[in-house]
Amino acid sequence: MKSLLASLLASSLLLASARADHGQEFFLLYDAKVRAPGHGSVQSTFSFLDEGDDDTLSLSPGFTLGVLPRTALSVRADFADEASSSWAYRAIEPGFQIDLTPKNLKLPIRFGLSASYQFAEPEAASDALEVHSVSGHHLEEASRPPSSSSMTPAPLHDHGAHDHSSDPLPSPGVDLGPDALTPEELAAMSAAASPPASAAAPRTQSPAPAQPKPSPHHSHAASGHTHAGGIHNHEDNLFTARLALEVDFSPDTLLIGNLISVLPSGGSASWGYAVGLRQRFLPQLSCGLEALGDFSTDGHHEALAALYWEPIHHLILKTGLGTGLTSTSPDASLRAGLVWIF
View 1 (cartoon, rainbow, N blue to C red):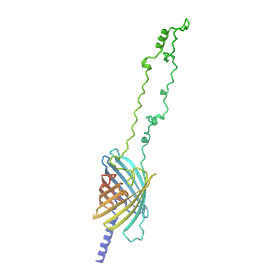
View 2 (spheres, rainbow, N blue to C red; view 1 turned 135 degrees about the vertical axis):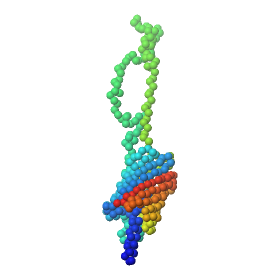
View 3 (cartoon, rainbow, N blue to C red; view 1 turned 90 degrees about the vertical axis):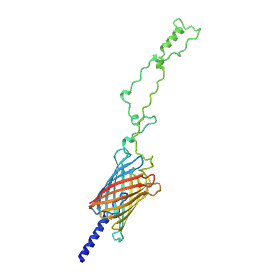
């Protein structure tokens, strides 16, 4: 009997430990747990953001691997289809995570620190060349040397092109000699030497070539949404740090909070928060609430309700439906993802 009770107790503890270990992978925040060396996770998240006229689709695959006790390395990529343009690579973000929890701490609390650097995709070289001079000509073409066909030599001097109509006529009563021309002959010669009216008319300047339009860039200015600035920044090179606090109220209830700092290259730091609550109500199914935002009332703020399903051991499927809380946030969001733990 005692052996049976001991076995049941051991099984219960093992199940509680397994439940506390899985289902902690949120959409908007990081937990504080670090996998043991040689263990890690592969994950991918698909997102649809309803931003009025400019909807965004994104795909973010990632990989995490424990390399030292309480230390893991990670890398995440980001691909997006903004405003229904086309899918394109947007950024890659390598980083690391450290478990800061004291080893002899008896409380159900865990601390963690994660840091990463986002290398955003630079502007295309063709866009950088779309610059025009004051005269409206493309600078790239203006800098080219003239072709051989355009280097026409200057025409020889033609006396016939001069207008002699302004030559002075002999004054009346002045004798210019027996060989001098009469005034009538001088007037006739002047008329013959003058160019025709069509040739004398000033040449009209040909219109300047139409300026090539620069490549359109994605912008949320009309809807008020933005992907730059604050902690929700996908367009700049930046450093991100998160301090995570994780509290296990029970084997089935988990609360996580993140303090977020984002430092873009050449800019000032932005601060924000993320918080999540997960509750397991079936052995393989949990639900949760998540929120993410800037430390400013008019910044990016988003709330999300999610389901986390573990159909088999070490595989988690998750889906979430969110809404923005400010004008600079998405009107609505739909997310789906998977996590494989090895």
